[in-house]
Image (cartoon, rainbow, N blue to C red; front, top):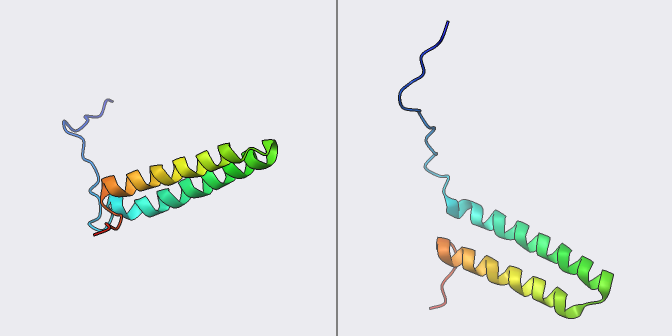
Amino acid sequence: MPTSLPSKPVSKKRPNGATVDNWVGVWALSVGIAAALCAFFVYFADCDQVASTFILCAAAFLIHLATVVTGSGETCE
């Protein structure tokens, strides 16, 4: 016996406290840890200081962009 599906799917509402800004810090921390591990492996595998520095600077720039775009970063005024 077939069941009838609703014509419009019902989505769950987000709680008022859950916004993107709450998760930017967690995301930034995970990107920072991943970048530090990648730089660690690159440095000790090939003794390549330039590549390790590039990985860390690229991660820092990516975190900066994410915090500026979402507005969760502090502004320098």
